[in-house]
Length: 256
Ligand code: ADE
Image (cartoon, rainbow, N blue to C red; front, side, top):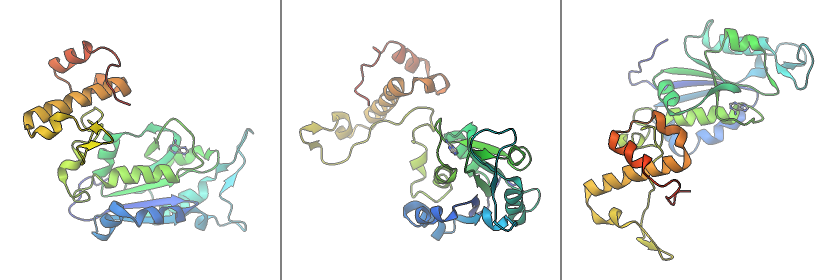
């Protein structure tokens, strides 16, 4: 698999029973610009076009009984292999609640490929042979069950696309993101300095750069302590910051 891109667009092939859901999101804002600027190319395919029986069947009842229908292996293998070759020469991602939980490091890793494929599951599940013999990454976007993998595919695509060089105007924009340092991001404010009596923290108006940096880091730490303490063991903190958090009275920040 090629992991280095030399100024060609990242190509993403999406296989779905409902490929029409993707277009509207690709036609707005940052993804639209990324596509227009040839930084990203997205192609969608209807898996049903590779269902060759009379009724174009893409699902069937599970062996062993139980509820729901299972996506058949033949149309998905045929679709992916006819577009990408056999075996495909790029990561093949299955969106499924039984996958690895998607996070920012995974988005960064996927952004390093020149080509990705995504398979959107529907119904109860997909035949396990797809997962075993075609898929390289099974990804879940959270511990809840959606009606299909289309929204998760858009979530993964969006998170990956904004990391591609040139997609966001400001290269600094992604380095301050929540999670890129292992912490939640600090609070943001813009004008006016007072709205309905609620004021912007003095430090942000002071123009003191060192003080601003300290305030932001402290707010990141406190917000993470309050909302996502599970992130702290893996966050990149110095001894002083760890001591600060250990001594901080629990839940004393105003973060929501
Ligand atoms: N398909 C249905 N639910 C999903 C989830 N949480 N993540 C990825 N794919 C899914």
